[in-house]
Amino acid sequence: MHIENKYNNYFMKIKYLFFATFAAFLTMISCGKKEEPTANVEAPVDVSKLIVGDSMIYGLACEGTSDSNIVVYPFSGDDPVKYSCIDAHKNHRIIGHPEIGDWVGLVLDKEDTTVATTVVNLDQLKGTWTYTVMPTFKDFKNLSKRMQKKMEKTIMEQIPDSERALYMVPREYGFSLKRSHNAEPVGRVRRSAGADEDSPVEYPEVKHYVQWFSWNGRLILVSQKRVPRTEDNKDAKPPKPTFDTLDYVKLTNDTLVLMHNGVIQGYHRKTNAMQANEHANKKAAEADKKAAENLK
Image 1 (cartoon, rainbow, N blue to C red):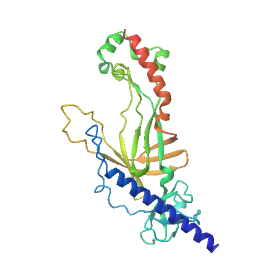
Image 2 (cartoon, helix red, strand yellow; image 1 turned 180 degrees about the vertical axis):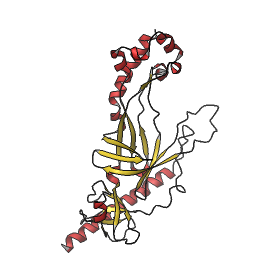
Image 3 (cartoon, one colour; image 1 turned 180 degrees about the horizontal axis):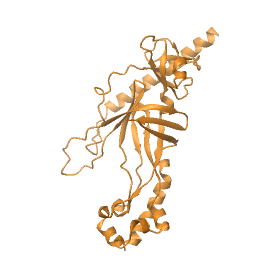
Image 4 (cartoon, one colour; image 1 turned 120 degrees about the vertical axis):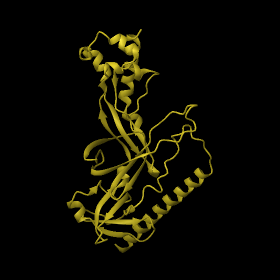
């Protein structure tokens, strides 16, 4: 048993050293390149001075992790440490299901640092998470001039069901959480030029997520509005990023539930961002074709 534990500890050290070396290698490569941003809002968000005060312990889950204890190999390279997580289980603060080799974050009891009050499986958190949104019909005054002319004698509620179904297509909104704290938005659908303007429906704005962070047992999502580069604003400063701090409610392989400002939102896992709106892209192309025919 002693030999087995020694082997497992050695394996965790090798795994940690591999990730640390690989990360350093990527940093060297990225530092050697000089790239010009294609738009003034695409520059990375500097959060080094904004994400502060995080007291979580991070590392890899080791052999010996169970429902009552979690053994963590810290990123400092020290020996694995065992923490009691009985209270975390009782209070439903085990976010995800930690398995050996997973990247985990722990919030420790302030009075007893051998006790973890919250455990988050950050490896399980990574991935593409979405929820379903539906469009709403625009007010008549918000329609394009061409669409107003077409609809001037039609009450929105009297649109035929066949045409209504063409526009009332659900979309998947959300985010992809990736390595190195990178994030990407989910929700944008390919449209032809002017299609959104001529469409009688509108969707909620898609948040442009750029980064994510773990912080004191909570999730921080960083978003930044996209402003296309033009001749008039090429020297303008990028919009300030928005930091949303969310509380974990539940995390499984297929389900993520978060709470933000008292509002609970459930997400389901998708393979990737492109697959998330595959159906919506197909329907958008059909709607664009139909709108073009109607406006002739």
